[in-house]
Amino acid sequence: MEPRLPPGNGTGTELRILLESLRLFAHQGYPGTSTRQIATAVGIKAPSLYEHFPSKQHILERLVLIGHRDLLEALERTLAECPPDPVTRVRALVRTHVLSHVTYPLLAIVTNDELHHLTPERSAEALELRRRTEQLATEPGMRGVRDGVFDAAELITTTAAISSMGVRAPYWFVPTPTLGPEDLADAYAELAIRMLQPGST
Amino acid sequence: MEPRLPPGNGTGTELRILLESLRLFAHQGYPGTSTRQIATAVGIKAPSLYEHFPSKQHILERLVLIGHRDLLEALERTLAECPPDPVTRVRALVRTHVLSHVTYPLLAIVTNDELHHLTPERSAEALELRRRTEQLATEPGMRGVRDGVFDAAELITTTAAISSMGVRAPYWFVPTPTLGPEDLADAYAELAIRMLQPGST
DNA sequence: GTCTATAATTCGATAGAC
DNA sequence: GTCTATCGAATTATAGAC
Image 1 (cartoon, rainbow over the protein chains, first blue to last red):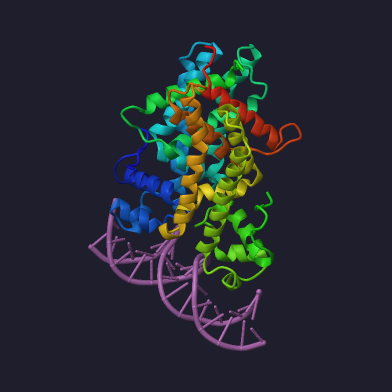
Image 2: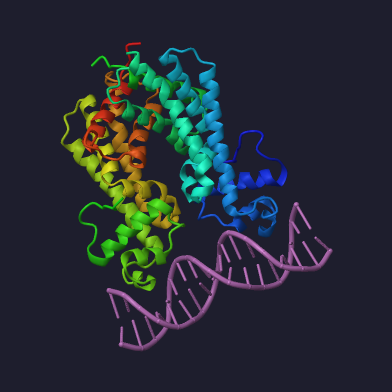
C-alpha cells in the first residue's frame, strides 16, 4: 500500500521521510523499524535523516500529531455544519470517523498503535487532542439519550462499539468498485443508528 | 495488569516465561521487547531462556498459537451446544467472541498485533486456525440472511463491524461491579442482533 | 537448569569532509 | 544537505563452567 498523508504536512525530503516512516511504522512497528531502513526507503543514508528530524522519536511524534489533528479537525468541521438533531449528528459523526480512518489507513494505524512508544513528554499533546476528540464524539450520543431519541441503556458500551467499527476499518478495508469508502461510511452510520435505537424484538 | 493464559499451557519456569513475555509483548510490542527484559521479569538471566525456548520467536509463536486455539475451540464449543436458529447462534457466537477477548485481553492483543512479526513458516499454523475461525464465525450470519431472518444487504461490512467490537474490547474494557465481562458480552450480542435486523426507521 | 563471558551483529546518533 | 567513518550501547544467541 502506498502511504498517504493529509495535505500541508511537509514537502521534499522531509515529506518523503514522513511517508516512508509511516509505511514502515505501520507494517513493522516503531521499535521494529530502524533509521537505516527509513533512510534506504527514502533514498538517502541514515545520518542525513538527522538534518530533517532531531531523532527517530520526533518522526513518530510528527506522524502521531498529524493523525490526531486530522481526525479532530474533521469531526469539528462535521459537527459545525450539522443540524442539531441527534440522529443526523451521529450519522455524520460516524461517517466522518470512518472516512478519516479509511482515507489515511496507515496514519490511523500508526496513530493508534505506536503512540505509546513516545515518551510522556512527547505524547502529551497528542493525548490532549485525543481527549478532546473523544469528548466531541460522545456528545451527540449523550444528547440523544437525554432527549429520549436513543434508547441505549448502556451508552458507554454502545459508544465503544461504534468507535471500534471505524478504528478497525483500516486493518481490513480495501476499496472495491462496489464498496468504496463512502459506501462503508454510509453502512457503518446506519449500523450506529440501529445500535442506538430500540429494536423491534 | 497481571497476565493470564488459558489453563494447560505450561508449568514452572516455562509458564512464567510465557506470562512475562505476554505482558511485555502486549505493552511494548515484540521488537520492542528484549530477551533480557523477559529474563529479568522472570527472575533469571537471558541465556537461561534458551533452555526453555529455542529463540525469542518461538515464544511469540507459542503465544500466538495459544490465542488462536483458545478462540477457535471456544467458538466450536459454543456452536456445538447451540440450537439452529440464526438469532440464537449469532448471540451465542458474539457472546463467546467477546468473552474470549476480555477474559484473556493481553493474549488477544498479542495474538492480533504481533502475529506478523513471525516468519511465514512460523505463522502458517496460526493463519490456518484464523481462517477456520473466520469461516465458523461468519456462517450463522450467512445462514440468517439466506433464511430471511437477517436483513443485512451488506453482510460483509456488518460482519466486520460485529467482529470489530470484540477485537477492540481488550484495549479499553476494565471490569467494574456494574459492568462485568458477562454484561459486556450480553450488551454486544444485543447490538449485533440490532445491526443484523432491519430498523424501524 | 542456571550461571558468566562473549561472539557477532545491529542499533540510534555524532563528527567532520565536501 | 548529503556523504563516509565511527562511537558507544544494545541486540539475539552461543560456549562452557557448575
